[in-house]
Image (cartoon, rainbow, N blue to C red; front, side, top):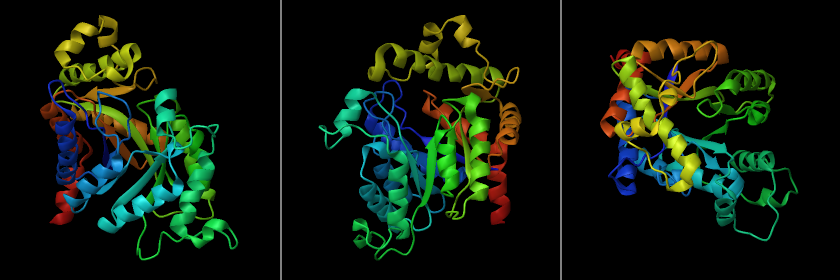
Length: 345
């Protein structure tokens, strides 16, 4: 199984977004050294907790500081942007790092005010045309507009010898069929909606198998929020930061930041601290935490249930050193570092 990472640019207590962005670029180098297959950068707006607002910038910087690892977006929120601009931007990134760029497409709201601020035409009624937008992006990348279509005269592929791999991202399962029918890779955010993960990924697989035109790189991926530490108890404690952050976001909104474990321990009640971080009674947790052996067992169960060929880790850990250690232990748990050493020898 492939192992990958989604990087949010976590802003830790006492640090700035500038430092968080530098850490986010450094994460690509660490992930490459550990044998991770890809790193994607998120797009979060109007938040104090995360610094990754423009994944395209971080992708370019990460690509220039690495040699092997794939780099991409997790995700570009296509509902806010022009498909033509997105296609051009990612073709430019692909030209900078040929054969290594992923264009992860999603849709999300950051609230009515942010959504309005991101729109160019604020007088028009917002439309739910995500499927049309995705197909327009693909038409630019594949020269797929029919003869006579106005956009058929546009050719962003001119001068480019390769194009990025396109993925759809989702958290409700509604994009699973679209991704499958279009022959695209599909990444499901199990850290948002774990109960729907198996159903969505199996649905994608069924439609993908019947797709007449399978795009390069079309696979299934399960994204999970994971904390790995030397012991189960330590990992559970580290996961309190993310749990407390979710509470802060619910109470204060965008101004919330990521609390330390010590602060989180005071903010969370005993019940919240004791919420399971492993599969319990068939119920998947939103936050998965444990030792390498525990995590390996949990991921294997999830992969078997979903048919996912790749797992992508999200890790909101306040302490940067603990976060780096978690990523190293995750690599060991799934054996990807050992696989890389074996392949290189």
